[in-house]
Length: 154
Figure 1: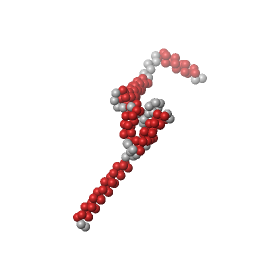
Figure 2: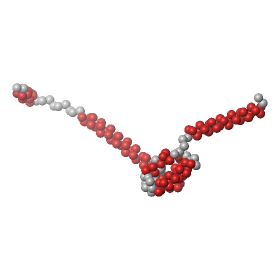
Figure 3: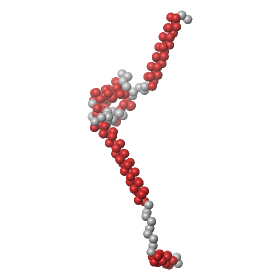
Figure 4: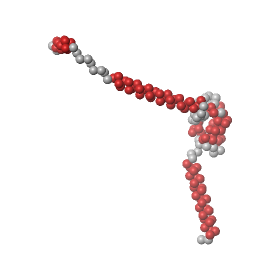
């Protein structure tokens, strides 16, 4: 085989390899769809999830999302475009800074405090459940108890 032909074959092979890698990368990245985004963004008028709203505003947001999906935008790019268009309140999940950070931290702290309180309460109940040993009976009381029990045995 001539050197020119070998380089042509090598070039074609490398193009095929690049195409296969590109196809694999596209297959690994799932295409964004409307239901996948609707449950993570809010209708800015209703304050409900987009998937639950039927307002004209929700329909407008869906139209924008469909347009961006058709343009091949990723989920994060679509969310960024929605935030740019409608503001941060369009996102269903709070951001990771400022007051929104408290929305992530406070529930976790409440759960942790509740678990600690339950643990402390359980240990106190466990310690308190062992009844102290009764005091020994006076011999006169023991004799009277035996007599009463014998009278009941008829």
